[in-house]
Length: 307
Image (cartoon, rainbow, N blue to C red):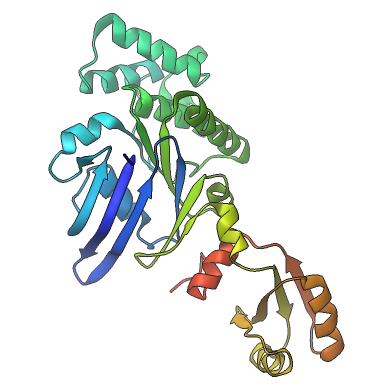
């Protein structure tokens, strides 16, 4: 049984389609990333998965419970960490967890014991009596995680989890989520627009303009590019691109005023390009493909490009 099963989901806001025929599955014990630009459909999908709103069409099941008709059962199985803080800054870390536990019907010694356990796991037991507003962004994120995990969910859903965190806190967060998967077999699903964050996932689903453009493990998706990625800076990208097409029989892409080529043994091909077009190439970048290159290959534009 999949942890999450999304089938042909569609959702629109008036005339704007946010999700268009989206389908995918998340396996139990998997770290799964939803990667895409702002406005690509990630937040809408997050809201549907967390039972904040139903889809216009299609079905979503979490551990075989329908988010539309069995929302209460879904909520018992999920923990949610929002992009924007959901903590009460005037309460202490412990008090925030105490109120969260009571919302889930937890009481007395069992709740206090669970709070102690989560504070220890998040390495914030020493700050439990501090008001949340006095904690750093990284420590507040740990309290958010403790809050989302307090009732022992089988699936943790996070919306842009590293937003506002410094690099060290982001690394700590990713390490903890990996431990959560490995030691407790909690399924983790997060939304992100950051390439390096998605690279750490077991599998990635790439969304753009509400549609699925790619899905698979980061390694498998990168291998689909078929070699190295070459970017040529030149004064006349369209002209040089056309000449490369005629000379070498390949189809370059013009992107941000440069010529982009995907080619095996890129270092050898760079030498051939420089020899074939002396003085036409101002600079060359040669790199192994990333998930951003996968996104560019499937959509024709960069992840952060304004549209």
